[in-house]
Image: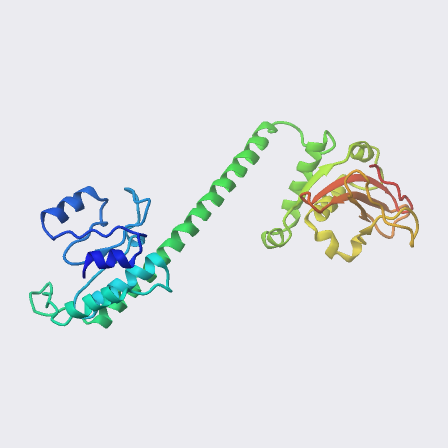
Length: 311
């Protein structure tokens, strides 16, 4: 293969260098990272950015064993660098036809004359390229999993830290908004199995400015029930339970307009904490959406006929 004609076919997109197998290729092997050298009539494409940790499969090694291999190798190089639509120059094709008219007969490793067939070489190279692509995908997937594991470990460490800091203290969800939300998370973990938690993950939530005061004054319903229902609301499970009677909170009886908070466009919602009970309690909350991260803001607990919600 004429290196000058090959370089001309590449239209200046790459430099072509010819080295005779011997001292020059040994020196090249010492200068390059492991498994990135070339010798013995083979060709190699070194892409920009080569470094010590480079993957040898990303810098393709192309073998030339017998008649027809030179043209196939030249075509592979030109198309790899210039794109699939690129073609060999007529001068390069002519030189390859002349060169392959009387091909060299390489020796096999066992010393016998003749090399593997063109078809066998192509099949091996296709398999090598396929393995290289599979390896690259596996490395990318491994990197994603590594980052996910690191993120989960960070979250676990944070949770452990919060648990350690609160150890020895009496659990009291009414002590503060933070303690209440912790109680909601614990209720969620206790009352739902792993499959349900995967299908209905606990969303972002916060406590409204007057919600804790409302809870401390609440009578006639257990706090554990409030925590359980809040967990159902924040995970979306409440919408699947008919008895919760989830619906948008309106300004009055049926037919009135729904409530929207002017400051951020949050929608007001309510659901049943109790049913078939005189003065059955209802949980009211704001739900943000749109450009914001969806958030549930617990606002108040009222009676069945109470349509008020603090903003």
